[in-house]
Image 1 (cartoon, chains in turn brown, yellow):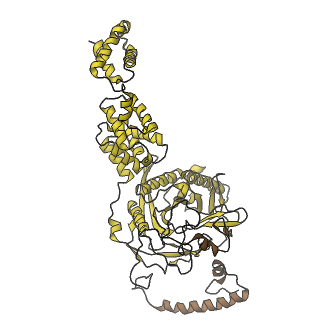
Image 2 (spheres, rainbow over the protein chains, first blue to last red):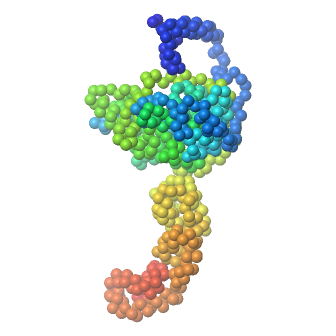
Image 3 (cartoon, rainbow over the protein chains, first blue to last red):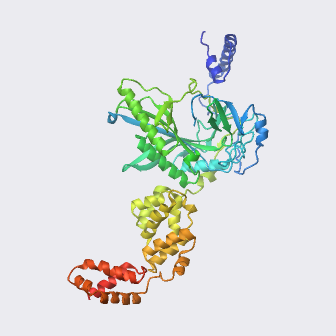
Length: 101
Length: 471
């Protein structure tokens, strides 16, 4: 398959999406077009403009370090697909590996 | 063969900050509670839950950055680091990326008689993931009590040159963090963890391929894991192979490193600014808070002001609490050196690594005992005995001595009488002494001690005897 601007397979893998070849082709078309559109922005000269991480003014307010009650364990585990002795149970992501730090 | 290679190590260290609540929510983060009892929508990663930053975590992180001489950014940002792992149900970890909290610090320490300086590249605040346990039947079990605990990430430049040096650096960093009281740094509880980047090269050659080493969660594991990896890489290169860039886990039981089995996706975390958190502008109060006296300065001051031997000063300043105990103890004492030895040998010896804050004899109690020695009310040997009894019974030195009555040293008058008595009773020994066999003073002292039931100061007895014998 011809490589477009976007590596759809890679992105799909990162997002855990399983795409059929047809879907992949279709998404390739859409994403490439979106990127082309966004690329118009690169025509603007921003050499004098300071980089901006946020569009708003202001900064975050901090919270005092005072404990507050959370939610009930039974309630939380009640909506989980599976549990085991008050622990959430999920399929292991890394078979054969003892621990991940 | 190994001598031909230069070893290059950088560390990435994670410290759990000692706060009451988590980094972005008000859940308690107490260690050892029942699983999943300290959880809320924020730390469970429920959609729509909004993070609010804990100011105490910021304060503690800034304290560490300042103690490491790092350049602190008055404004820093939080980012989302995207990856899939069950211990992180949001699908991203909130961390800092560009515009870290602080960068360009350094830690200086002594290693094998040399002054070393290891530079810190950056320091970031980030959230801890949930604790996961992998079962033999292919499941992962998750406890979210740990999810969201504040972490301080400290990344060094690759300035370390051997596994032993890495261990010393890690020890010194832990000491500093404990001095700052920002984390207990109990490695068994996972408060402090290290990953390493390690490569080898022949001097003058470009940097070798680096391997990331994980699971180095004790001082011993850090040194042994790195040592194994150095040997593995050198042997690989010597046999004509090449080092593959990969992440390896250290297996402490078997003393080997193994490649970590991951999906082949390369590190592509797609960092982007966390839209739920505005920039962090540091309140100047965080930058003005006085720093405590740090280990090196304290050790130097102990040597300079108290005339302590460097090794004794080192032992007394390993922990801030020990140094504080010692300085409380010596208020009003004249024999500082003796007090230092009592703390370094008897107190620490008795504690065997436990915290001095829990030691049953408080500085005032020990001071009372040492003052009795200084004023020659009791002998040093007697003091050691009383010290043990204080530990056994919880009674004060005065109480124990009062109960035992006769243990107070006899006055010099009384001693003089006993000395004269012993001289009268031992004409042969006296004769020998006067003929030059001065060694017989030992048995003479012994007899005086026996008559005083061990309560006399042997040095006083000796000088009284000598005065009489040489008269």
